[in-house]
Length: 276
Image (cartoon, rainbow, N blue to C red; front, side, top):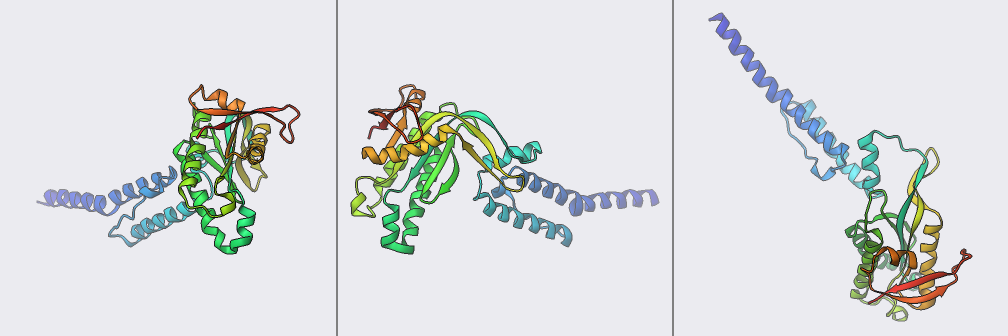
């Protein structure tokens, strides 16, 4: 009888320890793994009978909410490999062939003077649809520069057809902008200006030991930025370099704009515009 009671007590203790400790801890460990992968929308509060574990679960949920807000300030594709590999963020980069796109809102200065603070919704609409188009084509939003957005393809993750996808994103931005009502009668025909270039750039963490920014730098990036101004000079919305068009393997319909001198370049550049 005593042996039976001991066995029963031991089984009861195992059952209760599993219900009160082991199972909740396994669930909390699973939530921590979701946070480690930055799958923050998968983190759930797991109620438990023990107040300490219950508080721990609530703290994990609050952490996930806080990280979700933080994640809006930088690309998660950059953070995930660092966390997964246990790598220390440090200044440095590597040479990568990328496609770079700059897109900005024409007449933004005049629009700001006319509307003042009321210009913010128009800027938000433009940047929102631009980001959606970039992400849908596998691009990474590098940064916002005033009323402009910079995006790169083929970094930090490889995108084999990066030139074509950048052009597709540009066409989607153009179409989306024309679907919106004209904000200014002076710019009813030109709703966006975009420059696209493909080439080798230094991609990585740029900055100091205390503060870093993941970005691409080099002549390839500079030319993409300059092509936005070239688009204005030619009265078109999208200008892409001959290097970008060559990388699309004929999958993009483009019209030649000829050879142009670009500020900062000693050699003239052959440029094109995307067909509408």
